[in-house]
Length: 308
Image (cartoon, rainbow, N blue to C red; front, side, top):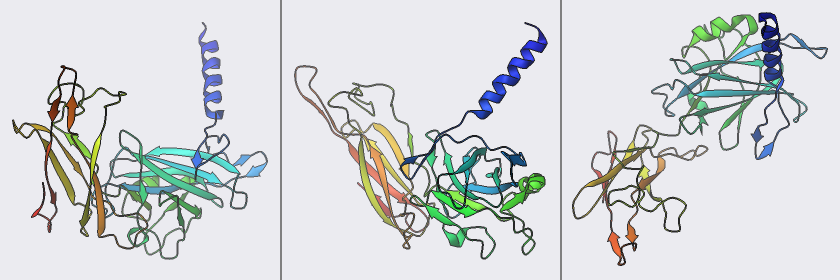
């Protein structure tokens, strides 16, 4: 194959990839195919004003730590026709937890964020903690998982730029990091984690999931624990222990979460996984394997909160 032919095929495949659209589910309704947004100043005879929006992603709503590698998606749409989309853009947060995502000024944008190995959907940080200029309006949708706003660049307000930057200001957006105006998303609490557990084997005494998956006896167990605390860094820890040998099945940790739209953010709850008790009849007689659960809630004012 000649280099010229190879180059032509490469260009064709690139164009096809860029033209291929994606469908999104918004509020339980699937959109038509939406193409990837470009920086073109004119499309189909309509003039466009490409710009960037700054988004910062945090691990908890108190904005203690940022998250690198979160996926930020922006859908740009018409302000007057709810079914008309101009395109979508995707960017990944950098070391400062920030991403500058392409959109169109003078249009409407929807922002949502996903993070973690399971692409968990994050939540919009409450308005009192948003880093936005006074009077910069937006609304949240779908249980606080989307931001919808009219895209407009306010320039510099009280020595701070953002959250929207013109097409030629992308470097300013990227250099703004967390110090300037931006939209903020976060997990509701410290992420869940299962540690020191044998999750890969089954039908062994110390297996975390004893029966085989997709069988009638397979099960996963959770315990709901309510916690009254203003701390977003609070953590519930449960140890699952074999009661006779005192061996550890595993440890599960989770941050208690408040309802995203609740005004009482001190009322939180965590669904914490533990090792299910199990029965085994494969030996011709029944073997009962119980689980003892010991746990605690940690946080500066919660050190003495025990669970057993």
